[in-house]
Length: 140
Length: 381
Image (cartoon, rainbow over the protein chains, first blue to last red):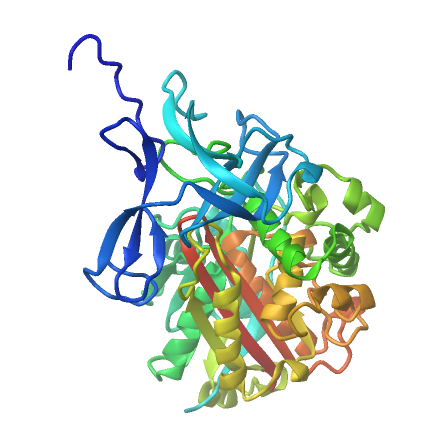
């Protein structure tokens, strides 16, 4: 590593990847036997139990809000309110996340609202001074 | 195969006992259940002990150190919110398999205050959604809203009902009425779950003495015995969204199907239900999962009062987890105590008149963990 290279931020979750061009994306897996799509890399299909039929894929960057809530109270030290969403990605994967760049009020969010991935620097409550790279959703 | 019976069952009044130990809490319930049966720890051939908070600390053996070290085999069990029911079922299986004919099952938990959830490692809370239990069950409620238009008020009515029921249960943590406006206006934790729509973290213990049919007859205990008509468990079969959104529905539906098959009855035959109302949203979802109504009808069921005491199928007449309290490892056996007490006709002011068949349901799990569900169908012997 040369002195000019900015140290890479640790990933908040291991399925955040970065390609050679420096673009961040989420890694997933698709089963060659049953077609099920998973978040993260894996070898065996939880849906059909097939072994060694998993293909590692880049997950879709866009999707729709399936369910959501506004978290008003969380663990001590966590900034609230924030929007907790379950997103159906456009490739069939399902993923949990925080929806940002919207008012954290019920009236601002609706079922099936289109969203897209963004990657941001954030500091976990139990790792003060250690920013991580995380993914969030924002309105598409 | 011969039937398995409950011949002694009891629970302590749930509360906050920070100055007591876990084995001490367990011992109190164990002795209550043994006394209820008129038996001694010396009569027990095995102990199944459920506890989550000290899962690595041999709570069962420490319990015996409090009430008598007879050398019987001890199985310590941890299985999220299904922990107590899992211990009970392990005892049931041992008798069903004719290994023993008298065993003790105990569930116990000592809990702190505050939110449950999260996990080890670097926290993702707030950054990748929320791992808190109220948020998880808020989304489960919102999924029901998405499908069927269920309202905040309908969810809130569950808390009004269960808190009302608890006013008739001296062993409940709380005995207070909470009118609808109070439930809806209490602190919002995660929409639609307000603070009064979240179960209460309490300390507690419950225990049951299980016996084979021949032991019940030999001991002359059939009068107050309760027959276990079904004892089933499930884990979460694969469902596409459950890695994103913990799922308590598919496991409950699978266990319910097996339980009704094993008991040879249907949901229409059940006189009362104690189900896992860890949050108000959960209760409505489980009406449908347990077949108490068709899919999409849960809101109507609570509106019509069908699940209140005096209704068609009273649910959580104990006050439920929402008001009686939810000491994780004890809850599964406390629910069995409640239903058994009604089947014996000993439930006092909250007695479900003429109760002959009852069902208990617990389901536990969390983000990235999976699900454990246990259902028991009990019948007056």
